[in-house]
Image 1 (cartoon, rainbow, N blue to C red):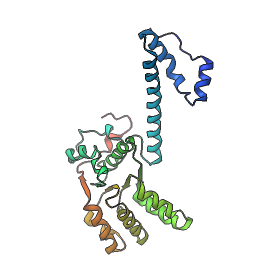
Image 2 (cartoon, rainbow, N blue to C red):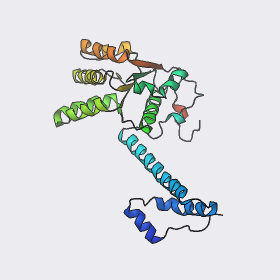
Image 3 (cartoon, rainbow, N blue to C red):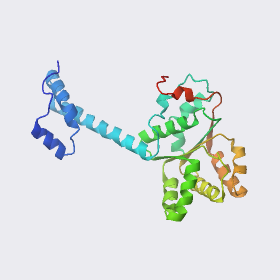
Image 4 (cartoon, helix red, strand yellow):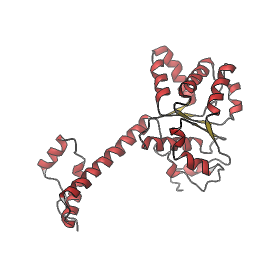
Length: 253
């Protein structure tokens, strides 16, 4: 039984904290007991201990990046119910989960009616990219264009646009939900042009791409941006009943 040495020597704990390894103190007693019981080589013991710390730091960094990128913790594809009545191209989703589209600077267009799971799939792909060390930014399209409008006034516009055009993966949720004024149209066009064949966008929409251009203020500019985006995008169409009952509190897949 691993019952001995349940606390770390205070002096050792002090040294760990000075080296910014304080969290190791939580697993060290158990690891020491395992090492003594199994007669571990000191080098093997050190490898196991430092691997614990490396994994903890990796997990924390991934969690922080996800939060900074606006990804919801529960919007992960591990939680996606494959038995849902929502119809979609499962092979395409499996290919997208490999992130080859990201390596090729291609886009993803998730289309379908309200509630079928477009946002969950978009953010789920974002979480996979984040776990692989890619920078991700997830935005509601309506809120983003409103923020950019404010940015023109408070002098943050250039910084915002720079972030939107340089992040590895940009997610725009609920695109073309409402009519877009001239500023929003210009901003969307600039984002698409600057990211064209340089970085990927995942866009979700309740509307077919043929409906996007009439929703924008300047038709020629809109056509140019939509043409660039759609002709470099994988179309994931979701159809069927709402997926949201699967996400009710206490619901298990």
